[in-house]
Length: 104
Image (cartoon, rainbow, N blue to C red; front, side):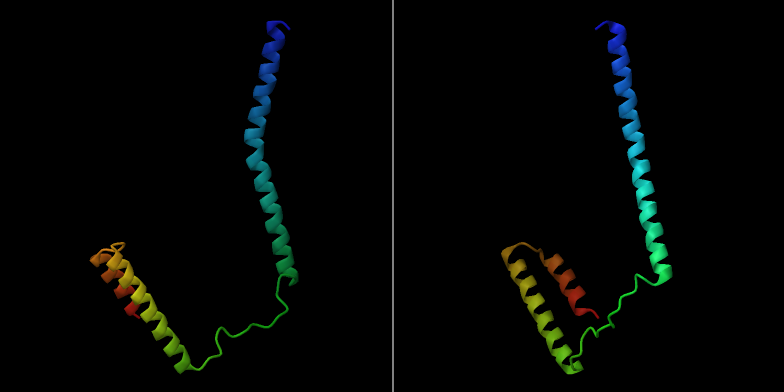
């Protein structure tokens, strides 16, 4: 193989690499746009809408929710206190986290 053939092969490899580098993002953009267009069409036709009726987040009584929230807050404060005692949290970090938990 002479130097001209080697240079031609090198140049072809260079062109292929450049093509792949520039074509890949373009292909991804086209595929993404295609997916968005399909989604918009399904949305316009109403095909994306769920057939199930929405459910309530919680059907518990308000006093039960308050008791559970209070217990969760106490548990969280207890865990923060344990982390402070182990030296994982500084006093300042503990106070900031405690303030976040206790503030409404």
